[in-house]
Length: 415
Image 1 (tube, rainbow, N blue to C red):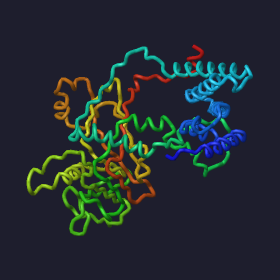
Image 2 (cartoon, rainbow, N blue to C red):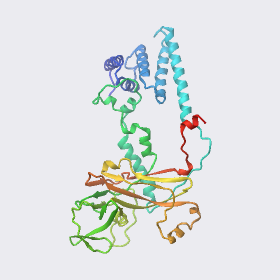
Image 3 (spheres, rainbow, N blue to C red):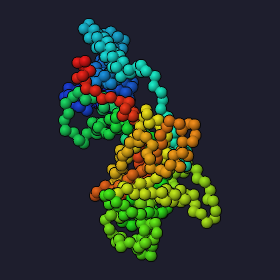
Image 4 (tube, rainbow, N blue to C red):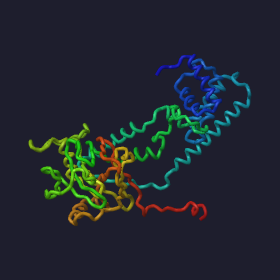
């Protein structure tokens, strides 16, 4: 980045003061960036000018405790300028008022930090969620790193926007084309980002496509379903007709029927995923065999297509439940994800399966269930495509409902 010349710095300083006098919203972020990125002494700004700049920046910060660290830094720099150059400003009240403002800001910052860092009075046992999967390296490691990279790349806000976030006290004018004020990215909202970065993400190491039409399926294979609210049926295409997936019985269904859904996968594209070698010369290559295995276990529930990841979770249902839902950005790909709350083991298997599933000592007292991806096309969407390593579903461990009591604030204030 090219540094300013002393002449450019003087011009920019005067421009900033003009913005300050006019109470322009852009003053704060521009002035803070100027003070942080440039060496004001080397640029020839006088101590009086630097003092005025830091005081103006401190006054422009939003009146929010989380901004007080930056505000305090500006006040302390102004105090240093004042003490190191006695002839700078001779009025004794200036130093006194500045010291008082520093003490006040410091005290409020301490109160804020103490309020948000409430000490935990009871040691909580860390709940474990035990996972059974054929791809532990991918789902537990690679996929989580890729999810972090995905959300950082998508929602990372630039340095200018971070600076602009500190200032919100000045009334806003309508300036949609002023990039200095563009701070309202989705990533600016802490809960918004926490739902993405503090969660466990389910994704696939290959592309996924769902369409209402059979055009251009992905290369690793395709499954066909007749899907409408309350009913679905698996199909396959043979000899120019749609047939039952189970017994090959021909069905009188046109290829442009609005209830048809075509789901297809690409070959594996995640390079770090280590795949087993093909068992025999006639078997498909590993990068094809894996998505074919996923396709084989794909099903449908009404208008939703269910992609089985063979991802089984074990948890203590007495203390924790497991919420699974479509990733927050799924609608951008033309899809809607289902949501489910696992509160216990559901009686959907045969008795023998339960006896086998609870035969190990570590399974005692735990419930289990499977995490599947439930996806349907949005109403106005004909084709949806999700690239590999894109978060599709999110897993949130939550407290069991019986472990939480919701009470009125009024009842707490008036016991």
